[in-house]
Image 1 (cartoon, rainbow, N blue to C red):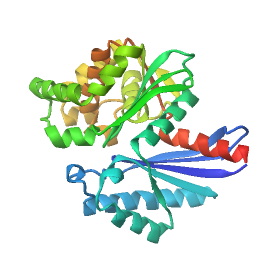
Image 2: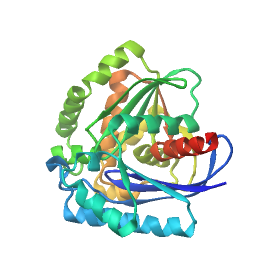
Image 3: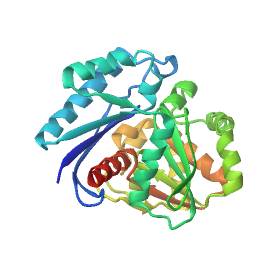
Length: 310
């Protein structure tokens, strides 16, 4: 058995998964944790990483490095997504990580990101041949994967993550109905390719990955953030819509007091809720699940599978 670590370095959070290998690519999780990084704050639309964002990213990786050392991990893989994909000055950050930690960061494109997300979801929620739309909401980009059983029918990464939405619209607190309308009009235009694909395949289920969907489910179950570990869970559409109605009329202070609210998501959860509600309504999807597994679990499974085959 060997121990490996996957770091998913996203636009808002830096996620760590440490696992030990079992047979046939399966693994047992030894540790899971995350740190807020907000790499896109103030610079995502300028395609820049600001100095304080670089510092937050390095601090998060240093914390994860200590945890990795404590668990005597043999191999570390770091996957970076939208914020570093688009940053013109990313080499400053990459060089700092290489010098201070000895790690090489793999910047993956949107298609590869979607592929790993799909592999993670498939571990947690087999859907038995039904046509499913998988959604991963990020800070810089949102990934959609249309699948049927083990097959990907279509996948696409859209640069409309929630950090970008906040910077473009700078919404009031609480949201005004006119702001929601403007956001939805923008989503309508930006996701034209998705609407066309779904006209042909008609997904009946939405599976939301990790992040915001973990928080939606914690709010639904009224449990402390991430205290109720689940690999996947039904999130009834009607229940989500009640959560959405509460969130869209809430202030930041009110959200901070909600049972189930993750402090890391208190700012972006409202626009994420607007986004999910719009997609459900537009595509007339009546069933929704939350999958805790996403990119890092998909990457871990892939790496463990390759090891078991070698």
